[in-house]
Image 1 (tube, rainbow, N blue to C red):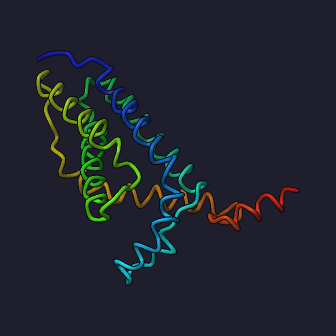
Image 2: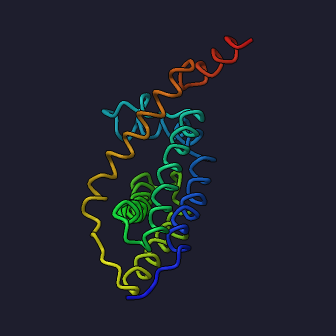
Length: 182
């Protein structure tokens, strides 16, 4: 059995940072701008509740970053054998594919679609190959794929709770926070 360099595991965090920098820079603005088009194409969806503020995006991305740092650390410590690392790696790769599907369905740019095919998916494929070449047993992506929507929903629910506590998640909420601190 070969050795897996710690950089393979820490690469997950590095790839995540690059990818989520794109999401951080575009998510809030995109959800506002895309809402009319989404409402027209899918009128039954409560798009007004799915719009995110910059504060919400910051909180959600920060929370997920903490999780990715823990997963990467566990992966580095165990030579990629950690179930948490492997689940995060599988979820990250699936996340990249989801970005491509979203952009195809939207027929245009969606946050994260630029880095998904050039960072997320290539890193994920490379990392799995390195693990396989070193003889690291794979736990399979099943549990990670099933947990991915739950983790994402949990992160966004917690981000909503954190940002709502301080006056709301929208522009008016941010304004209320500024006024209340004056």
